[in-house]
Image (spheres, rainbow, N blue to C red):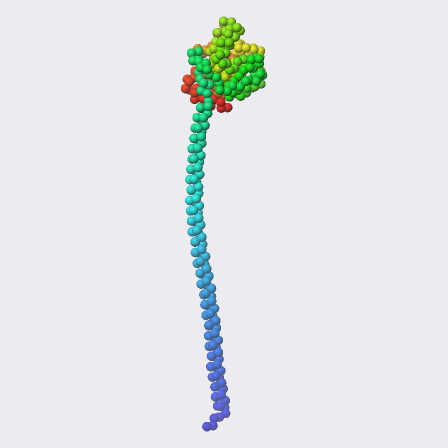
Length: 308
Ligand SMILES: [Zn+2]
């Protein structure tokens, strides 16, 4: 069979074209498939990354809520702790105040048991201090405070600092004051009385030396005068020292036992008794006299007798 040469070439070209198209298609197909696989892998990889990110986010949110929960528990625990601590502190301060109350009571009882109740007793011509009574502690008064240093004077020991402060302040304001008589034992009474009789004659009994005798036996009472008057005299009431004592002695716990204008006792402007700052201040403020109060009212001041 004779095939014209042109047809032959056409065949060849057709076949070649066919081969070329098939090959091209195949190549295109292969390359598309490859690209597709690559993209799919890429997508998978991205999906994987997204999943990981989502998972990480979920975890971190879980951690955050775990932390929040832990924090809340911690805060609850703290609240509980501070409640417990507060309760504990309240309990402690309750104990402390109970201990304070108890030791305060013990202190009060001790102080009361150590304070001589005689020191605030009302004495009179009919109610005397026992002749056997002697103060527990007596201290000699420095010579510069004593009218007659040849005859030493003693004062109940705890009263002494109040007395010396008063004498010092008085001297700075109105000139020197002197103690003519302080502690007197029961046995000395007769001698003192006869001394008054000697000095003032029978008229001496008009300001009875024994009305305040028991008070002198306590050691807390002093008869005061000036170096000029140099003795117990009603003239003392006109001295600036007496005016100063009337206005200031209470600050040192001293009172005038037998003031003027009273129905029961002779006026003794020189005779000052220590009754403690609290009671003396109350008497001064109210204008009342020691002997106007009941013994029961007076005894309430025993506990603060030597308080400043
Ligand atoms: Zn006196």
